[in-house]
Length: 52
Image (cartoon, rainbow, N blue to C red; front, top):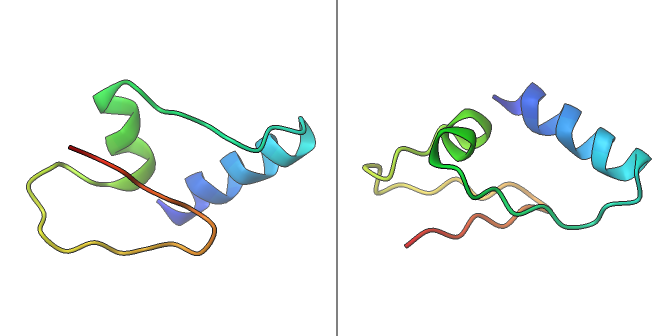
């Protein structure tokens, strides 16, 4: 999972993109591993994960 985020960050930086909003649930799960059922949150430096 961390490699996915690293590749994404590299791609965003190369394209001068500083914000990404992931709207599709499956894509959020792919990037973060968050299923909405976990009560523990692992904050990654430089990333903000918001869910309802």
